[in-house]
Structures are given as C-alpha cells and as structure tokens.
Amino acid sequence: MSDNDKLKPHRDAIDEIDATVLDLLNRRAGHARAIGELKGTGVVYRPEREAAVLQRIQGLNRGPLPNEAVARLFREVMSECLAVERPLTIAYLGPAGTFTQQAAIKHFGHAAHTLPCATIDECFRLVEARQADYVVAPVENSTEGSVGRSLDLLVSSPLKACGEVVLRIHHHLLRKLPEKDGIRTVYAHAQALAQCHEWLNKNLPEQVARISVSSNAEAARLAAEDSHAAAIASQAAAERYGLIKLAANIEDEPNNTTRFLVLGHQGTDPTGRDKTSLIVSAPNKAGAVHGLLQPFSAHGVSMTKLESRPSRAGLWDYVFFIDIEGHADDAKIQAALQDLSAQAAFMKLIGSYPLAVL
Image (cartoon, rainbow, N blue to C red):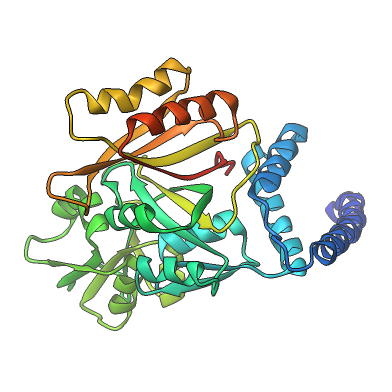
C-alpha cells in the first residue's frame, strides 16, 4: 500500500469533519444573529459570558490541542459571531502594530475593528463620546511599573473596567537590511529602550544613537524609511512595515508582561473568578493609610495591588490604586467597600471584571 493510500482515510475523515465544523459554525452564527435581533440596540458584548464560555471549553477539552490553543480558537469563533450581531470598534494607542493593538486583538479577536489613536487621552474620549465601543489601555508592566497617563485618566473618566488582558511582551531588533553593520540609530518607545538596555549594550556599538519615539510601531515605520536605522518592535510591526528580524526576544527580562484594562460603559455580572479595581485617597491624618487597608483584612478580602500616585488635587496629595480579588457584588466585598468609604476622603470603583482567561 502506497503512502497516499494510507493517508487517504485520514484525509477523507478530515474533509468530513471540516464540513461538519463549517455547518456548526454557521449554525452558531445564526443563533448569534438571532440574539442580536432580540437585543436590538442593547449591549452585544458581555465579558462575563465570554469568560464563562472559554472556561467551560477548557474544562471540556481532552486534547491533543492544549487549553490555550482551544481558548484562542474559540475566542476567534466568538469574535466572528459577535461581528454578525454588530462589529465592535476598539480604540487603542496607535499606530497599527503596537502591543496595545495586539492586546485588543487578543481580547476581542480579529473580527473587531481596531481604531488607532494618537494618544491614550484620545482613546478615552472616543469611547466616552460613544464613537468607539471600548478602549484597551495599558496600566502596568512587570519590569517598568505603571503607565502613569492611563492611571491619571482612570481617576476622572466615567468609563468602567469590564475586562483585562495580560500580554507577554517580546521585543525584536528590526531593520530593512539583513545585517547589523551600518546601524547608526535605534528607534523605540522609551520603555522598550529601558527593557532592552543590557542587550543593546552588549550587542551594538556604543556610538549607535538610541532615540525614543511615541511607540514601537512608529519606530518600525521610521526604520522602514532609513537603511541606517533599526527599531525595537513586535513581530506584528515587522510584518506591517516589511522589516527583517535581526534578533528575536531581546528584552532583558524574559517574563516581561504588560497588563491592560478594557473599559467601556457597562459593568459586568460576577463569574466566580473576578477582580475589582478601585481608586481611593486618604485624609491627611496619622494612620490614614492603615485605615484604608483595614476593611479588606477585616472582611477577608485579598488585595493583589496597592500603588500610590500623586494627585492633581493638591501638592503632596496622593491617590491609591487598589486591585482586590472578587466582584463588587460579592457580599464580603460590599461590606469592605462600605467600611472603606467611611475611611477614605475619596473612593471610586473603576470596575469589576473577569480574570483574563487567555
């Protein structure tokens, strides 16, 4: 029996399975369209529902596909079905090819329309004016800390957090030409330059200039126009601007990760695996910060983040950004927040949202 004869039963089975999968996908899309018609102009995207679907699918998975691969596949299925109801517009800090765009696609899938903005402020304004559905905003990096402008906007914006994205950051050295010789300038965002500082010291001549630009995607665009320039940017930026990858994964910290918040106009229902973000400020008196933390301990609420940032309200005034485990509708968190509001000079709930599945 020839190799082709041995392969034929498997290929025939795959063809039959593909036809079945296609039929089921279209049936699923039909139900999504019917749901959209029943909702009318209401909210079409429910983060807690998507998180529950992905968790359920991972629980049903028996391989050989790993859970992460299955979740990615179903994220795209849900993205396409949601687009049948109504395509979503997602604002992000551009230009195209940034890590923020990657985070938006990771969370909403490729069927969503990603809308690049010149600044994070513009991203927030578009969603606040309902010219876009959601904004994906970076809030912290595992090596460089918080993204200050995003945190400042969270203090005053009426938008609510309804999701989070955790993205592993891989930086590559990109250029039009296939060798390092002749590089005079390296463009990158300031954070990327800092995250790749040691690699650059070891692998490029000292006289190569390092120039900070607004984004790594902008760095890639500039490198595409200058044969003596290189950029630190993502694989997506390399593909978009036709650059060659001279070195891969040049970040000094191999676990370099950025966390993003998804913000829109609606809240979410509890899923059992949630996180809540809030902002508080303490009155100017002895023991004030201890008073802010005590309600969480008293009610058995686990705090996963506490960070201070200067307030614009006055000199040496600070606000505190806090993440806790659980949903604001949970009884113990409601009790903790009620006690906290009595202690805090200012308190704002940014939102409760499902933990990132992918």
